[in-house]
Image (tube, rainbow, N blue to C red; front, side):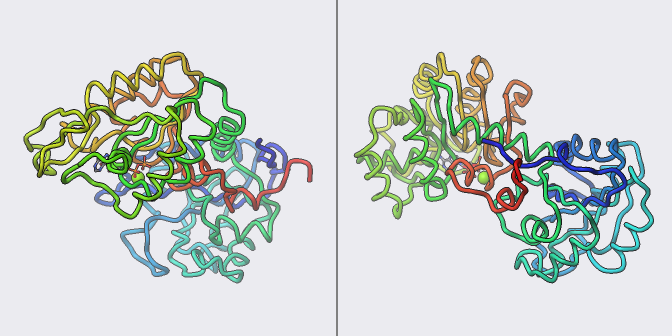
Length: 393
Ligand code: ADP
Ligand code: MG
């Protein structure tokens, strides 16, 4: 249950408000290539502006490893945000010290500054108290709207909350309400769909879903490892040998709720101009690899989705980045979009696949968090969420 204070529970008028957003966006030629995450933060930013807060935005971008890297500057994001909001956005060349303090001092209530990449300081990832205190000293209130970074206890996601009253923004609230409430008390029939590359990343989510879902449909590389554990020869397919014992264990305890592919799309090389065939799971030719679920599997999965009230999906059904192996993922995406179920997509690549399929609007909630949504689905407490004030405090 979502029981954290939000921006609606705190006085913002003329207050300096430090807002951790997730502006870790792809840049191309010094411009924002995909602004999904920036748009996702707009409701919170607009609310703060409307309530006359002095808005101080901060975020990480990429992996500069504690050093200043010009190509990982957030300056292009400030320009993009300015275009989206139609107001000027100030920019501070450093997220702490004189540049940040000067920029904040120049702001009137309702105005906005974006601070430079927090990861230009090693203290960010180290959650160094001195760095966290320096960041916190800019403000009187802290808002965390960076769900995508909430699984990390870094200075700007967790450390600053020790020095300032800390509340959730709208995006944080929405993510936790959807993912959290859906999984805490799921509506049934509840169908979970899982795929993607590596089972080792997702084993705990698989286990949890098998406990709470009526069906768990497994595709992608994940399914290969389960099929191998069941004794099928997957030839050159991506199979995680190390995960086979765990996969076998799961297969032993899982009932028919665990639904594996019955056929696979296989290719003679890992390339979008490979020769491609659809084969039953017990007939993968030597030298070939499974890169998508087959048509019979799509039909089987669709059948299981019938009448679902809740669908949670993490991980593509195949190598959707390549046209010939995107068919299964798009077919399942279409099927999910057509149901009346509450549908939730978690995972960076899964969200990208839904966007590429043009179906984002037909899904109840597409999470902006990759790692964070996975850890949340595992049932873990996210440090960035734990650090926020409880509703009744
Ligand atoms: P998400 O980011 O949604 O959690 P993952 O990162 O776990 O998803 O997995 C996405 C990746 O899995 C994609 O890059 C996709 O190409 C890859 N993938 C899916 N199916 C297969 C497969 N059968 N063999 C190899 N890679 C696969
Ligand atoms: Mg991924």
